[in-house]
Length: 201
Image (cartoon, rainbow, N blue to C red; front, side, top):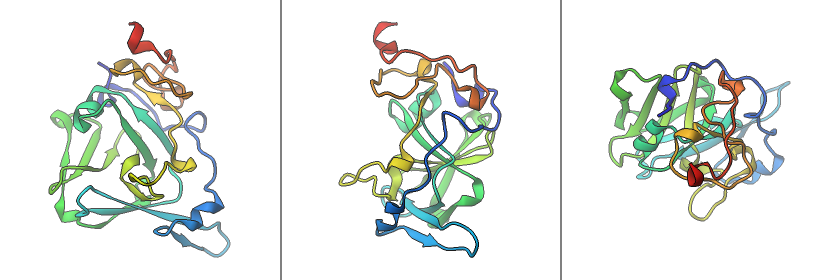
């Protein structure tokens, strides 16, 4: 089935994967840090961590894009029907605690993704998407905005599409576009599938 390491993609362009500017309401997040640079807009620093708290990370600003990936590698590595990815420029993601407690997995040593995880609890921290030149954190690991059990997904982090939907196993009935592989912004053919694809194939 289709997977990231098979895809021939280019650096994503503006389009379906874009997001709205960060809202002023973000300043109310208790764990967010707002940094003011003279002559520039304020940048919000968000925090996240693995499940046990051994590894902490920070990301600056809103993600470059956010998408739900149904590829077979993401599904197996996460033991889940899909992975929710929020991409950042490499310099905008920093591990602030527990870097020595992390390990990396690369599928067969041939994948275009290096997947970093906590050695203590096993939860994912981020993936280096070498073919796209960015790092992707996982939506549910963010603690500011609070995406935990008593929180909700902030508007700026909501995924804008499903990718590798044809490789998946479950149907999703949200209003987001479902790409069989990748949108044109990622160098794919942009072919879309219906919501009920996995119920009718």
